[in-house]
Image (cartoon, rainbow, N blue to C red; front, top):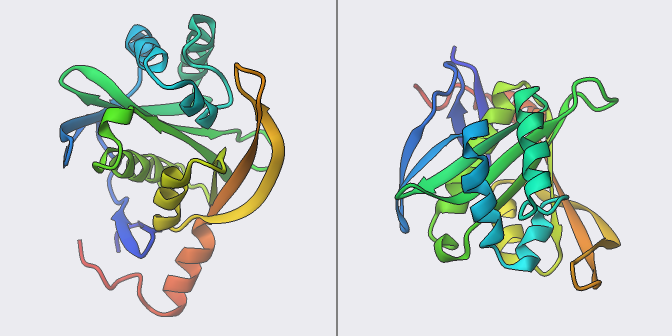
Amino acid sequence: MAETGFLAGKEIDMSEQRAYPRHVKTDAGDIDIRLMSPADEGAVLAFGKGLPTHDLLFLPRNISEPKVLSAWVKEIERGAIQSLLAVKDGKVVGCGTLVRDPHSWSPHVGEIRMVVSPEVRGKGVGKALSQETFALALGAGLEKLSVQMTVDQQAAIALFESLGFKAEALLRDHVRDVGGKTHDIVVLGHNIAQVQAQMEAYGLTGAVQH
């Protein structure tokens, strides 16, 4: 039987290593999703600089700063993180990152960090990118995922809730923007192992043939 993972009731086939780039059609047009490499540093920096300041709070560090991008690339090179880029007409319009630390007390847990350009929001790019990042987590054998964002980023919260994530914590005044204003952070979690166990208990793991 093929190894599978579950995302909001949808079965994702993990019987083969996912290959990139992957071509997806969205309401924003054709998008290529591929792994970020050191050669993308300049393009991702331009993407970061084009984001509204508040959107940068999706990420723990300001990716519009060159030194932050350089550190990010080094993390990719040493295998600490995996980043996927959504590219439209040669331009980066989204980024999804999976962060995990196999040497920590939570080697079974990964964190998803994702942000997309305003011009493609609500057009399926974020959903496609989050699903691919989720697939990376399944391929890595992770049992739980988390994602965090400010409480007013309602569209992003709704997106992840549609993918099976649930609110787990509220961190008050947890981040401070460049203007000095503090914002509350909501932490959403997805217990992959629990969902898989529930599906198996109901005999649903083989319901979808690949």
